Image 1 (cartoon, each protein chain N blue to C red):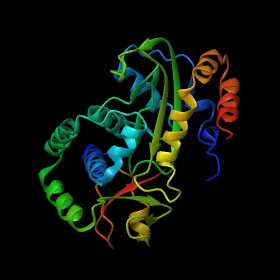
Image 2 (image 1 turned 45 degrees about the horizontal axis):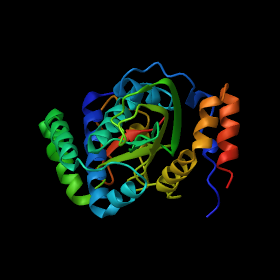
Image 3 (image 1 turned 120 degrees about the vertical axis):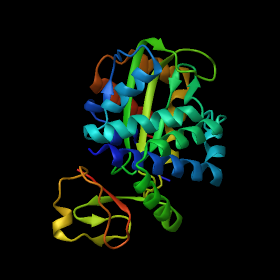
Image 4 (image 1 turned 90 degrees about the vertical axis):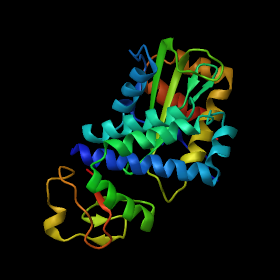
Length: 114
Length: 154
């Protein structure tokens, strides 16, 4: 898999985790007995990941993130699960996750599932 | 809500009765390897599960850890279980080594909303000392799967 795609996925998932904590997930986790005390560590992990991302891709990432929140869209059976539209056949048949591809309908980065 | 059968999300390939790991990072690597995902996705899963641990240990005490992770790379909820006889320093809340590890992996959004109920189900399962003892005593993967099914049948 393309390393640049890995960083984008990791960044988005860390940011979604941070969003969830802000919406009260931390209270649920605490109730279940988990430690969620080191929030600043997660912010540092986010920053470290941002620094590993390609700057041009990061700019695109930030634009999509502002628009949708969820930047990476999984692809199942040729469908972008960000906007639920079918991808053009040519795009759906490329070398999966070896290139950075975006959905032509919504612009999200695509992550092809097995 | 109907009882959640953890065994629905486990199969013999997602169980390891004798983890080789000596450290927390090695244990997370071994657990992630049990998930039915491709190698590229495993790298991502491992980084993310480590990031979650930076927020605070998922070692909830009494020898139990339940690392968990949500990511786009998971098509559905997946579980893995690993057991370590010698115990692993996981930075658990009670400072004790961890012997039973459940890994819970989920997409960021899943329609059935089972991520937290599954975490809660595992916490309930391992809260009882008699259940932990049974988990420790299971000799085969089949036995362990049956046991988990029986203990979470509701």
